[in-house]
Every structure is written in structure tokens, then in C-alpha cells.
Image (tube, rainbow, N blue to C red; front, side, top):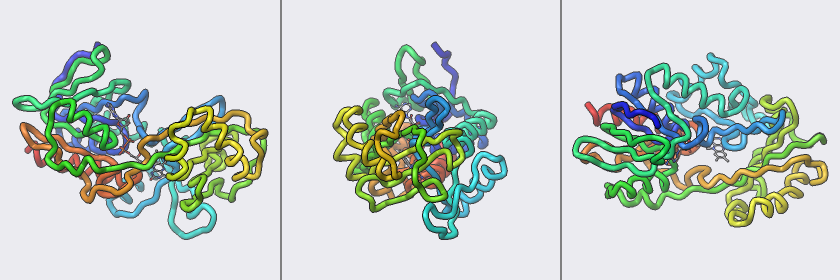
Length: 333
Ligand SMILES: Cc1cc2nc3c(=O)[nH]c(=O)nc-3n(C[C@H](O)[C@H](O)[C@H](O)COP(=O)(O)OP(=O)(O)OC[C@H]3O[C@@H](n4cnc5c(N)ncnc54)[C@H](O)[C@@H]3O)c2cc1C
């Protein structure tokens, strides 16, 4: 059982949003606790190893749109944590697509190290079950036998919004804006395939197909530069993900394998191993207009952040974390 320390900000979620916020808040002098139920930080920045194969099976790449995010990405490039993958998967359009060296989870590791060096405490394998308002702060309840409750002054909830709202509800909190309940997310089925055969893909090793009814993205992680052997990731379209969601994992794998093989010029018999990851929350259907939302200020602040706020994807999650940290610093002053 972990001993209880006093923290000024408790962050639920060590994905991009939570990690960026943690570093900024700790650098501003706050005592920060970050709790994540995963075995390691990262959330949807996820890399799986299977034998010698390495798969990015959550986020695949990122682009840069804002000056603020450009500054972070330049620092990550300088640190050798990310690299340019290509400037368009099938045709060059001049806009860099970035990948993380060794897989997306390594970017999360880097950000967790930075937050820790700034003074934040990050604990993994701990699921928060409720956030409960008290007279002068919040109590974070966790899986009881894993960690004692933590008392904090303010909270930042960065899980997908339906999960964050569930934590607030479990603590008896009434939301300041009920329309947060309307936030919906797309789902995605990620197929991870090893094969001794040679797949047919563009020279970049990937196809981005937003309008394809079956696979929205296909990549060979070997050509991407993160796997020593051929390791294919297939992401199903939003519509197909919803259609197949309730089938068993085995049925989904059986249904998708022939189409996956055909997409890369092979047959299902060429596949050695087919694994599946179901992503319930891929990205928001319609993002919230602001970079964060204040769930309540009473008795002390509870703020919601993540890629549903202000803009989706990796850049959106980063900018939400930074904006939420700045807002919390102001609210706690
Ligand atoms: C299949 C897929 C493909 C994608 N492709 C791309 C892409 O190519 N480019 C791109 O830019 N973006 C992509 N994205 C989106 C991108 O991954 C996300 O926008 C971003 O990683 C979200 O970061 P976040 O911090 O907001 O949330 P998350 O990464 O989801 O972090 C939330 C964290 O909260 C933790 N958590 C939740 N509930 C609890 C609890 N009760 N207690 C403790 N911890 C909890 C979770 O474990 C998780 O680590 C993709 C996502 C998926 C799933």
C-alpha cells in the first residue's frame, strides 16, 4: 500500500494531456500527482511488442499546425525522440508527418521523464474510481487495495470525457455544463499482423485512406522504422468499427484478416499471427469548442482536458494539457 503524501494538483490520466499539464504545473511550483490505470504512461500513444515485432497500434503519426505545438515538436526533434516519417504517405504534399523513435510509447516515456524531473509524481497501475469534493479540496479514491485515497487542492481529469464524468458522478458532483454529456467518440479496431511475406505498400510503408470503407490507415512498422521485422497495423474505418464492435475478438479477427491481406497484396494464409486491440475512444466526433472545461470551481477547481477539447489528435491533446495547466494555475492563485 502506497503512503499518502499531500499534493496540490491531482491529475487523472498520464496520456499526452496529463503529462504535458504535469510538467507545466510542476515547473510552476505545484506539487503534482499523476495517476494512470495503465501499466505505463501514454494512453492512446501505444506501442506493442510481440516477439521481435513492434507495432504502434494507437496513434500512428502527427502533424503540426500551431506555433505553440511547433516549439514542443522542435524540442522533441532536438532530443532525438521524434523524427520526420514522410511528407505525405502516397503523394508528397510538403507537410511533415512525424513518428516517435522506437514507437509512440517512447514519446510518452520522454514526457513522463520530463514531468518527473520537474517534480511531478507519476503512479501507474492505479485506477481512480471517484473524485469527491470536500470542504477545501478533493479526495481521489482509487482501487482500494492498490493505493490509499489522495487529498488534493484541485483536479485535472484527462480520461476520455464519458469516463471523467463518471468519476465526477461517483463523487456526487453536479456538472456546471450538462452538454459535456453529449461528447461522443469514434471507435477503432486495430489489427496487428506479423508475416514472413512481403506486403505491397507505398515507399513510405503506409496508406492513409480516410474514405475507405474498410481500413482508414495501414502501415508496416518496419518501413516506418520502429520494428526490425515486418509488423503490419490496420485501423478500421469508423463505420466498420461500429458495425463489428460487439463481435467476439476471434470473430473480428476472422472477418478482417482476408480484407487486410488483400489490402497489402497478400492472402490470409501469408499471415503468421493476427492480434486485435479494440479502441473504444479514438477521437471526438465533434470536439468541445474550448481547450479545457471547468467542471466546477466549488469548493475548489475540477478541470477537464484531453483531445476532445479545442482540437482532436496529438496536437489537440498537447495544447489542451498546456491550456488546462495554465487555467489551473490561475484558479489556484
Ligand atoms: C487507434 C487510434 C489511432 C489514432 N491515430 C492518431 C494519429 O495518427 N494521429 C494523431 O494525431 N492522433 C491519433 N489518435 C488520437 C491520439 O492518440 C489522441 O488524440 C491522444 O493520444 C489523446 O491523448 P489524451 O491525453 O487526451 O488521452 P489518453 O491518451 O486517452 O490518456 C488518458 C489516460 O487516462 C487514463 N485513465 C482513464 N481513466 C482512468 C482512471 N479511472 N484512473 C486512472 N487512469 C485513467 C488512461 O489509462 C489514459 O492513459 C489515434 C487514437 C487511436 C486510439
